[in-house]
Amino acid sequence: MTLTSALTFFFAIFIFGITPGPGIFAIMARALSQGARACTALAFGMVISDVIYLVLACFSLSAIAENYGTLFTLIRYAGAAYLIYLGWKLWTTPAPTEASDIPVKRSGIGASLLQGIAISASNPKVILFYIAFLPTFMDLTRLSHTDIVLAAALTVVALMAGLMLVAWGASKARKLARSSRAMQRLNRAAGTIMISAGTLLAVKS
Image (cartoon, rainbow, N blue to C red; front, side, top):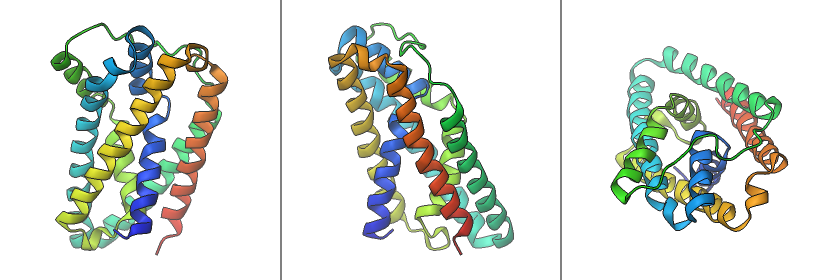
């Protein structure tokens, strides 16, 4: 992974992290009722689950890329189509009007961590996203353990930064956190990135 691809990967994961979905709504619900600090363990639990999915996707795709070239090409095109589809859905799906679609009760650090892991692990779209997304930024035929560690570290920092930024914003600006227009802007920004990544993956040689 080059410096440019690492920075692009970081930014893309950051945008993915703040895209409205079950995890973001859980963070907002907690921040609105208890403040941003109370979201730390919840957010870290989500990140743990995401990193596990990321590592699994790295090893699986690397093995396929090395041994089954034709299958990997098909997966790459399928991934490109999936990213473009996600982008289209983000552009066209009406944004929810409430940030508290997923209630999150007050709980201790351990319970919050487990809640975060459960929220992310129960969303199958997470691993599909990583499977579709990784070939855009990595040469999976020459993937090293250093690349995986770097990708995991970038993912941890980007996701935590994004989730805690959302938590801080929700705790400071209740109206903005519940604004349908704000949600729609996030959706469309993320949708543009998804479509761009899918297009790049499709034309990548």
